[in-house]
Image: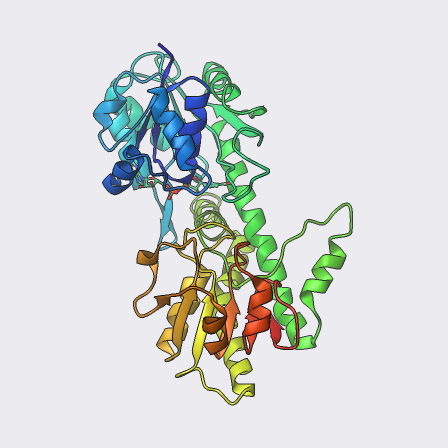
Length: 419
Ligand SMILES: NC(=O)c1ccc[n+]([C@@H]2O[C@H](COP(=O)([O-])OP(=O)(O)OC[C@H]3O[C@@H](n4cnc5c(N)ncnc54)[C@H](O)[C@@H]3O)[C@@H](O)[C@H]2O)c1
């Protein structure tokens, strides 16, 4: 019998890892607190775009995958990977999901087993917080009785080129023996493993990657506001700068950020440096401010554009295209588009939305999900492109809509105004 792997959290990262581990020969139990998700997974329905139902069916068919909400199914595990997100509430990281996973796993820990944290979290979580919970709940010690490590997530939803298996994975352990175990595990899952000297380095690496995106998105967002005021096409400037083969990485403006990584993760560093060295992580805070202001900026730009057409927001029919925070995915949690939809609704607009990927139960009250047909596009006073899903027919949008406010640079023509 192959080794038993438990993956706590069967969301985007946890399910992806579970499926890859089944392919690599592990017996996998996927634990999730959400019973509805467990039911769907057990019925062969994937809740993650990048994991097709076919992959899930193959995992079930192998007899080496089961989803469950019950930690009793984790008993006798060799390796446990914890993947749930760490939220930030009132500026303070909320480790409760990771804590409850640690508490649930601890009594099941056996000598020689390995626990790995993957959640993006502030430095010290693995070595201080998780280690204490595991030692207390199991009566075992590490180093010595069990192995413990941290490895950051690098999942890019909707990215067909860079998948879990071909993206280098940074790994760490609290001692040399733990690092060896963690390296060996991921060596069977991904092509390239990058060992670092401690979990703190790996935890900071994850936060650096999130902050890098947050800061660079904020940079182009703020510049796009000035560029618009100066009458310069920001998109053309980004395209031109992107021809530089060194020292530049392409980021594009947009209506704001969403999801977990860029908007939430860097604020864990802010909290960490305030609590530790007593300093402020100015870059992360400024970038967060800029990106959080973008939905208001989009609403203001739309109001000005409608005003030029002698239309108030109140009573105007607005069709929002794309609601999720990322192209070609359906996850709308914390998305800028949902914030924009709510603001427009509050101002009295008749708001409709088109998004074939979005689950309609996540829609704010009073916003109807529609098909972006030529009739629907023509009936809108303004069509606002917020998330540039590839499945939208942008030619049809340009042809049919009276006015398009495009925050993603997908439409062109005299009836189009760009962010
Ligand atoms: N840096 C990157 O490239 C990157 C990319 C994706 C995710 N991440 C990080 O990975 C982590 C997970 O993200 P995700 O996208 O998989 O999240 P997700 O929301 O898709 O999935 C999380 C899952 O955990 C479950 N869960 C929550 N609390 C639980 C608990 N106490 N016990 C069991 N299950 C629980 C939820 O029901 C959900 O199914 C986050 O920390 C995120 O920041 C990093």
